[in-house]
Length: 296
Picture 1 (cartoon, one colour):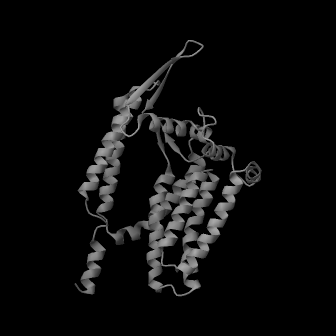
Picture 2 (cartoon, rainbow, N blue to C red; picture 1 turned 90 degrees about the horizontal axis):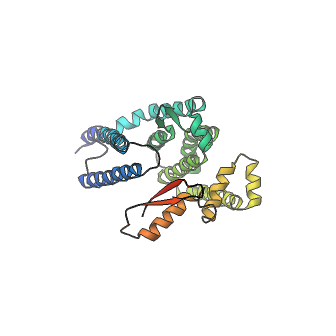
Picture 3 (cartoon, one colour; picture 1 turned 180 degrees about the vertical axis):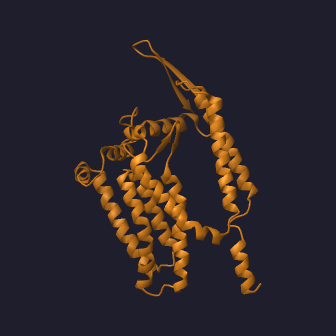
């Protein structure tokens, strides 16, 4: 195959082919997920139609399958061409969140991360994650036209371009108060930098600086004095509550630690095979019957 034929093949080849073994595993997981949703809704204290909720879950599975199938039929060149458009759309959605965020979810979570249209909710940052990765990939591919990295200037040139497209996302996430997702994007940034053509002598210095900052933040966030200092630079109380819950899961098992404590209980009681769905009925002092659902 000559260079011309190779270039034509790379231009039109799909980014992936159907792996039927993986597809079968995904179908099995989807079926298990729908079964879990159905049983959870069936035993929920609220009036929820289990069939309707399960069918909505199935609908989202079909939408995801359609998107995945479409992506498999695109070429790498097409994805690289559309990356800036996708990135711009993602940034536009994050900007719109500043005005059209869900007030109800903001009261519950303290973050302006959701759109709400009737009963449907939508989190734009989840769409932004693959679009951001795609844009970072485009920048790394474009960097190859300048040749291999032989000096610090070449490494810094690529890093600077990656930072330029990452910084607006971090600022937007700061404004909508979504610190957890900010950490996710910073992790993606480090990962893209590691797989980039940057030299190891440059990367270890960057990772050393980032790691040092991370260690300092962890030490501050896990001490009362450090939390007091961090609260003056924008950190919120609920963020410290999550850290304290991770350090001491036995404190407040009915509030912040509820999910963690229930998962530990489920694994301990159910073991590898599980005990199925259990419904615990109790009578409280006010003679009101309550139920607690657990998958054990």
